[in-house]
Image (tube, rainbow, N blue to C red; front, side, top):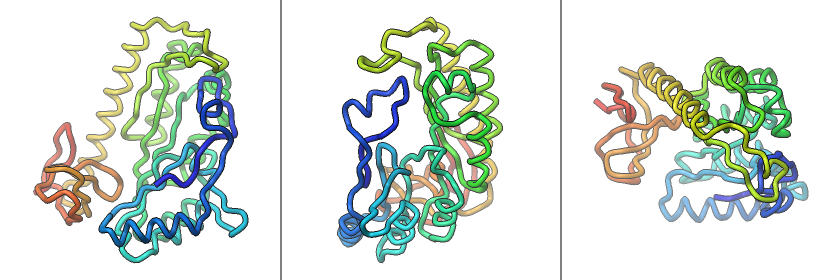
Length: 270
């Protein structure tokens, strides 16, 4: 459910502000009314989405994203509430407290990193350093962290890429969505594409291997334990922290499953 659109920041590689405009939010009353409607229709999970979700504000009604999470997650019929993606600058005590204290909220955060190298982050016009990223995600201890990384940005050399690998590991990130850099018309880096395609491909493969290993290690910690799995397609579903499960149940079912084994695709229910 989209509750926010647009972005008031201008990362050097991103076309979103040009095509989506400045940040704006839906009124909280309209959001909560739609969630009630969807829950009454039988939807078990609500995912709050936005271009820059942490910028959500309904100033007239006094809502921040944290307040919206608390109220949305407490509505009758909402079995699970999840955030789609949130920038690290918005990961702080208020948000994490709201997520921890609302039982229906998924223990998962998708926090884009984009790079673990400060020079690359500066060239990207990101508003944090690698150290800031690591410090802020410490608030989310116990959450499954997933992320986005751009590989082969014009300012990225091999040491910079190695630093990205290091930050991904130190942050405890599991699944990484890897995006080889490609220029976008109208952005400040539209004319820059200095890293050869073969290098982008090789670095992307290394990062995906590291991500897969981190995922499998995370899943293995669940062996012998139970989780509440929302089945979203035949034979597959997602646990509370968005770990993938292989479980036999009907799509739409919310089932309690015990982890019996781990495969390359996810956790196999016993």
